[in-house]
Image (cartoon, rainbow, N blue to C red; front, side, top):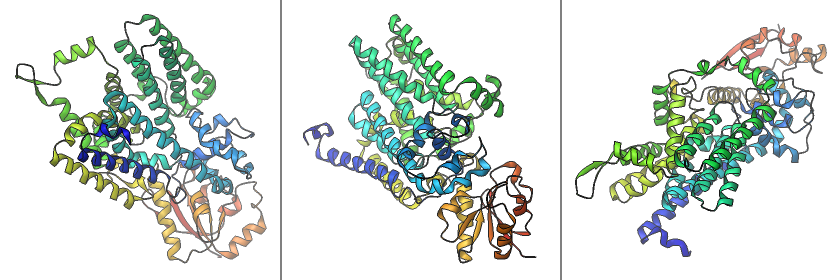
Length: 535
């Protein structure tokens, strides 16, 4: 390996071999046994949304889960183009009828691992981009440190293993930043224009992944362009033109007004003021409670490196951050400034909106923190005591990943306080797991259910709850259930169907059967167990 000289002496060489091993360890757990974990509550929604965009169906596929644009959905559903199975039941589910997610469980059982696999590939690509961006700004060693922190992040591992839109957002966001940095650092005019054009290809994909979060890429690039590149007026004009083209493609074609308006009305977004709020305190708490203890250490090291006292040429103390330093940074800006701009825009954007209280949204905020930590980690690792502490934290982190497998959504640095939860995600998954344990204790009896996880993962006999006008909503099937007296595992996914007796989306004859509520399962009571009684 002729490039080993970049690592310095033998001790440093072994250190960076260890860091490479840590990255490979994190990559392994993005792929290992992807089919083992129960689906998160929103996963069947994203699975079905992806499938609907790739096959003809009675409903416009973009309208499924219409609060988000279609780009991530399209990528999620792409593997199903190569899997032959009957998708008809999924395609017949009306727009946003999430209460009937379980109807298409047979197709989901054959495709969910493939869709998770593509997401895992995007998760690894995001690690490569974190390395490339950090290397462009701070060098190879810094790139390895930043990538280790990201590779061992519980949050990034989680999102690489489940089919939420976040991993696609992360990958396209980082691609935009990387190409923009290449544009800033390239001197040749033709290549600069090429990198700028490619930047906006990925800006378009970024904005098209999901609602709200991707929009941060716009002020990040605008502010960076007119600070770092303010003297190139022709390029700035082209920059604005490409941005307008990108926004038009997203908001008039990928996510047209007739769909966007429905989504905004459904979420009560009527103006900029309707998304405002004060979430700064909760946001800071979430930052320190997520990812890993190694991540916390990297934040503290970064803060110290920014605020530490240094010496000037005359040997007098001075702070790294000073008014003079700020003026000089603005006067002679460098591409590295874009990472600071990204952090502050995202941090303040969430801090003064109503979205900064959910760890799921803040995943994009962690990206500049991973990247910024690379350079100060190199300096601190030269101190043997600090390096020893960092290695211990890495080992603890790796042990925690093994122990948490495959339910990384349960992890937090400091327990599970309310402000730290992934709202609407791992709570439901935990309830399903508790329901499954109860059924196991009863010898895995026969069940009918509206919970996709039970239909896919349950080792006993499981059938789906009949829906109105369905082929099993008939007297003979209902009489069969009455005689068999199975358990009913009920998913309370809709606010209108928290009780099965009032659920208008199930077969009327089925919900009129005499049932006894056995238990509602923690942590969120989203899964309820009934027993049909022949009385």
